[in-house]
Amino acid sequence: MLVWLSIQGLALVDSIELEFTPGLNVLTGETGAGKSLILGSVGLLLGERADASWLRSGETRGSVEGTFDLSGRPDLVAAMRALDVEPEEERVVFRREIGADGKSRAFVNGRGVLVTQLRAAGDLLVDLHGQHEHQQLLHTDRQTDFFDTWAETLEERRELEVERARLLEDRRRVQALRAALERDRAQEEALRADLAELEAASLEPGEEAALLRDRERLAHRERLVAGLTEALAAIGAIGDEDQGAEPRIRRAVKALRAASVLDAGLVPLVGDAESAAEALAALAGRLERERDTLLDEPLDLDRVEERLAQLHRLKRKHASDVPGLAALREELRGRIRSLDTGDTGNAGAAGDAGGAGGLGGGNVARLTRELTERTAAYDRRLDALTAARAARFAPFAGAVGGLLGRLGFGKAALAAVPVPSDRSRPAIDPAPIPALEFEFQPNPGEPPRPLRRIASGGELSRVMLAVKSLMAERDQVAVLVFDEVDQGIGGAVGEEVGRLLSALGERRQVLCITHLPLIAAFAGRQFQVTKTSVKGRTATSVQPLKEEDRVEEIARLLAGARVSDTTRRQARELLKAARAPRAPERRAARGKR
Image (cartoon, rainbow, N blue to C red; front, side):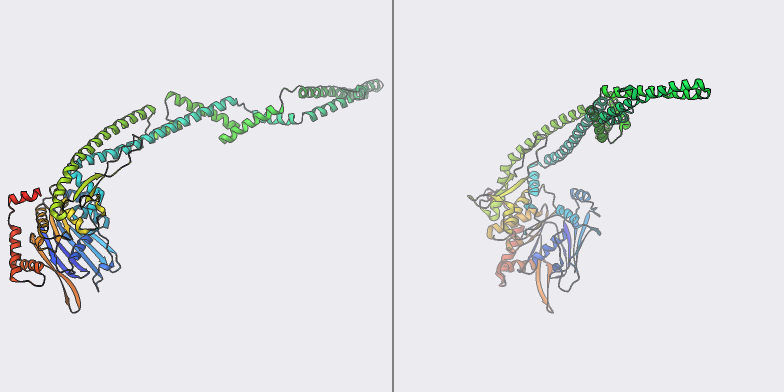
């Protein structure tokens, strides 16, 4: 519970320190005295938005500090620790400071924390109701928690939430493994296709250079044949043999032989002439063979160009020269052998599979089946949860409706309804757990509306009072704060509100602002909020009231400024009636209504 609250230099407050007690704590006072300021300061303490407008005029710094006693609440101690907040002697001290620049700082047990952490811790300790800020009942997640806690389905829902998160994570993992396996298979197919292409190419050493030479020869074959023919004709191997070089050389040999008979010194010339004749004959043979080869060439230029184009495509595809292509072919043969034998340690595609978990198609299929089975089991549990919730909708509406009737709503109804969710996704995607939303029907014949659309803070506070009364034995929160809970009510309804607040205070600490004496009379401790002006400055102060002071304050609530002995007597009677046990038969009668 909140045992101590200090407010310094905020709005109309110069300095206030309050000690609260278990049960129902009520703040009363004149309109405009600053009662809501006290609860607003609690909101600041719980992480609400802060700015420089909160500072009291002339102050450069303001603060609000509160001490929460968690004795007897090991659940809250554990929840605080889960938020990295360590209670000291089962107490937690919150502090919020606001500077003149509008910036604020938050502290828990003297340690600086983020405002978000302060807010998260505050949400576990306090529900603040009456203004449309920090009202957990307006959020569907809290409405869902309220109902599931009351219906005793909260634990199953949370287990399903954990299982769904696991299913989604395992689904992502299986999808990643399947994608890796498909990628590996595609890479293996690419390896085999590359190898088949290189083997079909039948690459030979020196082939490219030979093809380039062949291309040049074939491209100029006619000119080469003409040149060789002309050379043969000039030698005398074809055409007019008497005019060729070879016949003339042979005639020269004949003439030199005849001359050498007359002059022995010419004999060497005869040998040179005979060698020249033989060389011309040999040359003629070579020229004739070259010409015949060109004339009988089995290759054609198109075939050579096609082969060179094939080599060029392979070189460009693999960014390599022809010797490199031959080496790549041998490398691919080795990698394919590794894949075929199951040794994937050196294979690139298999290495990727290893990185994804080393799972083959069989393992992925097994995991997929397991995931499908777990999803089906999850769906069955979700259907059971939905049925269990549905079975509790009517009892919940009846119980809350009875409390709402006591709180002045006549035949109002509050129902918990599932929020529609999309279940059209594939079966492997586990369906989300439907959230629940409270729908409020103030009067018969009017359409129910989501509770978050209720405009009246007083209505919302009374609805919250009804829900909290129903939840008192099961809810975790330690402190309930109500503002405007008495708006638009009086008489017997006011008395019922007071009784419910008092009963709620037996299980949780309750702080309440009220203008109704019927509610104030039920307080275990009452505070009076006043506003005074001293030396031109207005300040709000808060004082705990003793018994006689309470009589005066309740009398003022009854009669305003015209307090008399009669109103004082009525005030004492209200206090006495509030403390008296309620007759069983009267409780039963009211319960039926």
